[in-house]
Image (tube, rainbow, N blue to C red; front, side, top):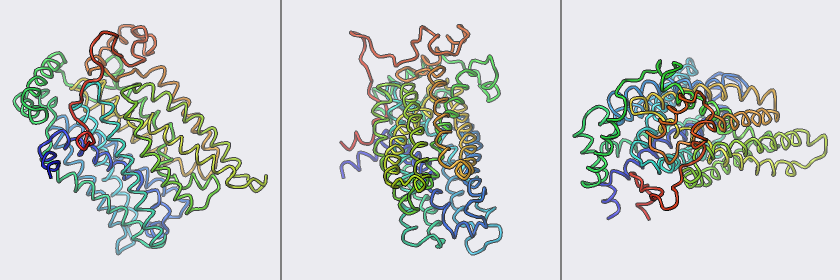
Length: 518
């Protein structure tokens, strides 16, 4: 009872819980469609075949919605505040989910169009979640703990993915693939997320940085006092006010951010590069088409579904290493090593997939190649989760000034949406035409992602927002984007404290929920 009472008044824990559940909503959708795509009643209701390109289009059109939603809700977050934007993007995602649920319910004509509309509307809302939550979280975290904060929230993203696939699998096994409730139940269960979020929404603080950027200093001070207490809140207020006075108050538009020569053009291109490279890792395809990948390795449908669930559980557990390592080794290090591990894993999967595909011809037992293939895919999942899942969402929140942070994070979601639209649209086509050679394609694209990250992406961890912006000023002065050639390569690594210097990591403004429990 004491802990419940404490949580009721603890703004920090409430923000952490809210952000984590909101990110879990995004993960739930990733896992939701994987088994719905193979439900016979769903395919019949939509009037499409199992190998129809429409299967991939229904999945991928959602990502176009996220791109548009990121713009709409980031503008709202910048103009009216982080909290109002979060409320409306959650309401939009909930509405889209309801539209999907009623698609073809008691009728058949027009069911496909309703499903498309539901996917787009839900994409609008989730795009808003993806663009606003990282800003909200990062603006309430200290410089040395931003990575840990967001990585822990993205671990809840994998919890959402696990929950969606587990519900899907349970109802599919129980009801069968010809029962409409085997695909409608997983859809409507997503409503648990927005309803839970609304229960704690009113008690959340608004971002003090947003208040200060809009010259609402009294509100900023009240918000900080509510979060940190009287003494620490006033001290933090003075610090944030001083930082804000050093920033340019000129508004930054989307056109400015894509204009060569503008101060925000270089950081915008880093954001674009990060999200394109994340799509090139191929893991958007793995999360949506996991069962089909295990089938490529030689197993039947049901065993492949169980193996996919096991992969997601492993994914969730191993994501712990992401928030343990991201502020210790840095974003850039995790990205580069993640790409290297993924390149090796996908190269091995090409070999194991080829042997499994030709096992009858060569007399190879299925398990002899499928088991090492499964282990390799599990390792690849861990490499993506630790290296690429949270990092590319974190960097945009660290490299822009307050006047451009919402737009920068929105651009991140837009590029993520467009890139994943292309990947999820092409994946079923590639599966049908390339079979196991699709893994070799992913090995090549991961190599590209790793090399370009090593050359051009700076280390943003352990530095203040202002210090990260100085990197781009120096790059402009030295007329190069190569990280190793700017400031003698200082931004290739975390700025570890020097012996006898100041303390290392500071206590995060948002103490994590698990700290409260322990």
